[in-house]
Amino acid sequence: MNGRWEHFHHEADVGVRGLGATREEAFAQGALALTAAITDPSRVSAHQPVTIECSAPDDALLFADWLNALIYEMAICHLLFSRFEVRIADHRLSATAWGEPVDVRRHHPAVEAKGATYTELDVRQQPDGTWLAQCVVDV
Image (cartoon, rainbow, N blue to C red; front, side, top):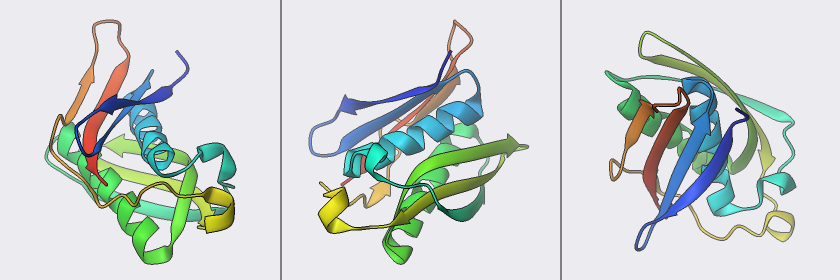
């Protein structure tokens, strides 16, 4: 399976979902869905790397922490990301996200992501063996 991302309906906010052959790929695709809620990811050049590390007691909380770490980098450093390499072991995530500074004229950001929530938060291996990682993001 090639990983993919999608949005799902939620009243005022946006649901982000990553699907992949591995848990790491699902997390990376979920991060891409986060970017896609803000702008077209194909408009974001992946040339500036940022290292992100976080840990949590379970996969679902780790996914929310991962997205919130990305949102923090977006807000503080004014970056958008389009490529992600995620490693997970023992409830610890170590990742590199590549992106570039926001260029309003080129990126046309639609919303500002404020935070990943626990609403519809779910990380699990599905019956077909693929992984799903999802939650609602406050925008």
